[in-house]
Length: 470
Image (cartoon, rainbow, N blue to C red; front, side):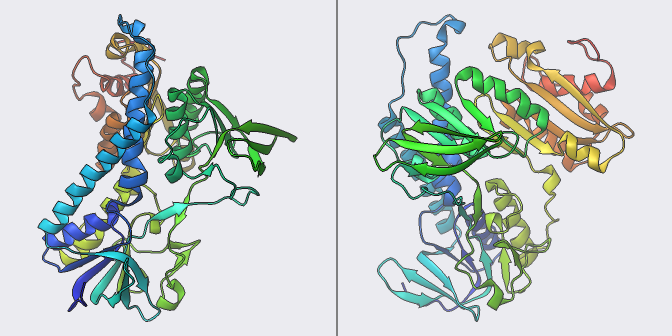
């Protein structure tokens, strides 16, 4: 590697935000340097979204095989081959990384493998794996440094056998028991996966419900479905300590409803959220405002130092891979192109790949009632849906939240099969300000799960066909 002559944009971090920004900036004619100390794709591709979805699909198939008699099939003792699954997961990651590499190279993006160091004067240097250090000169710097697991202040988190989500993706033997500290998205997805694999799973969540960001009603309905599968979830539980020097024997003490309780398990997963990975950036010296480590930006993703931009988890608005990618497009198209509208965060969908999955977009019922005087809900159960009955996936519902005065859709929340795919209908509706009648009068193919959205709209309009009106 040699010193560069100067770039229009240097990007620190090659996750979904970083590599998307690099490709789009190059398409717009900019010279781009992309710096990454680990593999391309960031947490999402290597240790998050992609590998967990491979595991979640295996878990789903295993559950179907174990209940094959529901589909008039005969199988004998299906079980997961964990080392084989981990190898397949690694192959998926490698394939996608090769695809990103090809795209970056095809667009002429200059890639630097090494750790970026940003000095107080704003200069950027790369420390390569072999110890060589050299500057990367650029007009602008985009910070796409991502996030890292938040480490809770619980005594014993440094003991052997205490895992982060990244650690859990490298194990080669199924634990008999797993305790998950944190009932958010990461915790509940792993709970579903390992429960399906045969591990006894317990989740301890400090807040009053699992999956705190999702609509209260869907969280209440999901809880019993997970308990039916064998997952134990304890909400309102505060973990006070972890003990156990012997491998595979950990005792976790926690407080619940004023009483001290404990549980012994083989492995412990810390899933208490993530924090922006900005600790080593001299934000104050650079004149970049920040709050609790999250970088403050304007609608064009520019920081308070106009030479620096930031996107993704480092900004901390919504720690989702697709948000990082969308923010990257906003940043570079305003910097090098003809402009792009600010990201409408209200129309950003999210999905939780539990079994069954949950997906949401827009406001929850509680949030909508805080902002609007006349809020109503329209719901349709999967149990009344032809496709759901046919394929024996009747757990779940669609819930639409709308303004009674003008019918404008404020939120869409789905619990049940195909929820992560169906939710984009709600995202489109909210992005373009559609009403309940516009959604309900759109013909949906039969038999499909998407009909549940149309049927829910019909419920709100007072003319449901397949259920009695409320």
